[in-house]
Length: 631
Image 1: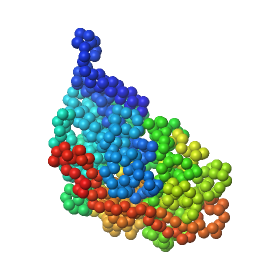
Image 2: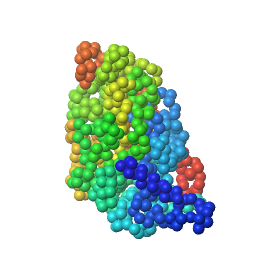
Image 3: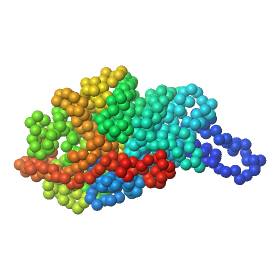
C-alpha cells in the first residue's frame, strides 16, 4: 500500500508543482497540454485524492521521529540521569516550553515537511497539524469543483477532509486545550483573527466535522467501487470506525474533569458529554462486533499488535489497530536506529540513552485473579500477593511487557563471558544490571519488553528487521473508553449506552478476559468512583508505554497529585535458598527478601502544568488568541 500511496502522492505533487510554476514564456511557446487550470486538482476523483493524500503524511509519528524518542511523559518511565536533550527530561522538570526546543522531541513547531518521507519531519505535531488543517480547508472549499466523480467518490473525498480537519484540531487540543477553530481558508497575507474558544466550544466544532465524516465514509474501502482498484491495500484509509472512534474520544475528553473545569469551572465529569461519548463508542463497537471489521487479537498473538520481527517489515496491529501512527521509513528499520538500543543496559546493548519502567508503574500490573497490589512491600491475603514472591501469579501482561529478575536475556552464555549475572537479568540490589555503567544501569529494577523480544541484545538478532508501530487508536482502547464514558455518563458500572448491550464493567472484563485476567472484583462495582480506580489501572496496564498515560493523568486531574508525581525504584535481595539454575528455569517463583521501593524523582508541578504553553509568537499575533494560564 505504501507504494500505491507514494505513486498517487508524487503524481499530486508533480501536478501541484506544474500549477505553481510562474509563466516566463509567451502563450504560443507552450503546448496547450501545459495550461492546467486552478481547479484541475479538484475536477475528478483521481486528482482530488492525490491532493488529499498529503493529509495522511501529516499523521503524527511518536515512536521514532528521531534517534531516541520519549513518547511516554507520565510516571511510567525513567530515563538515564543527566540526559537533558530529551523532551521527557524537560517535562519532568516542569519546563513545558521545551516542546518546541528539546532535541529529541515529537511536538515541535519547526523543521516539519509534509511532503518529506523522512521520519524526522513527521513528529512535529504543532506544525504538521496546522498545515493539515489548512489543506483540509482548501479541499473543503473546492468540493463543488469535483464534477467528474460518482456520488460515492464525492463522499469519500469529503469524508476524509472533514475527518482530518476534526482530527488535527483534536490532537492539538489534547495538549494545548481550546483553540481558534480554523474552518475557513485564511488568505496567506491576512493575519488570523479567529477568537480562541474554550475546550467545550472547540470540541463541539470537532464533533460536527467528525460526525459528518462518519456519515460519509465507508466501513471498509475494499467494499467500495473505487476501492477495488487497490483491493487489500486499503486498511489505512480513513473509514467510518476511525471517525466514530475519534468522535467518541473527542466527546469523552470534553467530558473529562480537566476539560470540563477549563470550560465550566467544575472539576467533575460532565455527564452530558460522557453520554454522547458512550453512545458513539457503543455504535462503533456494535458495528465491530457485528461485522468483524476490527477485533481484539487473541493473547497468543498479542505481540503482533505492537511489532513484527523478520516478517519483511509487515505492519503490526492485526485487526485490532484502528489508526496507526505515521509510517515514514518503516521499511528502513527506523526503530533500529536507535530507539531499540535504549531498552537494555550494556553489555547487552552498548549504545543508547537508557530508559526503564518505573517500579510504581509496574505495580499497576496486579494479580491474575484481577485484584490490584495494594502495597508492594506488604503481603495481601485477599489478592495473594506476597513480597517474598513478587513475580508469582501476576497479570499475564506483566510477563509479556516487563523484564524482571532472573529472566534469560541472552541465548548463549559465551556471548556474555559465561557470566550468569549478565546472561540472566540480575536486577536484585547489587546485581550486575543494577550497578554497571553508571547512569546507564537499570535504575528502576525493571526493563520493558512490550516492543521487543526479551532476548534483545547485541547477538540474538532481535534488533534487526523489526517493525514497531504505535496505534493511535486500537480496539482495546475503545472498549475502555466506552467503559469510562458509560459509567460517568449513565451513572454506574452496570450502565449501558443507547443501542449497545455491553455494560461499562463488561467492556473492561472483555479486555481482561483476552489476557486471561479475572473480572473486576465486586468490591469495585458499588459505585462509579470505586469502579474508576480499577478502570484507571486497567488503562495503565493494557495501554502501557503506548503514549496514553500523560494525557490520561492530565484529563483526570491527577498529574499534580501524589503518587502520580513519583518515579520509583524497587530494591530486594535474592533469598538464595535455591540454586540459581532453579531460579533461571522458573524466575516467576523467584524468592526474594527485603523488597522495598524508593523514590528516584518527584515532579514538582503546579496547575499550569496541565496545559502546554502556546508559542509567544503565536499568542502575540492578536489579543483574542489567549495564552494558557500560568505561562
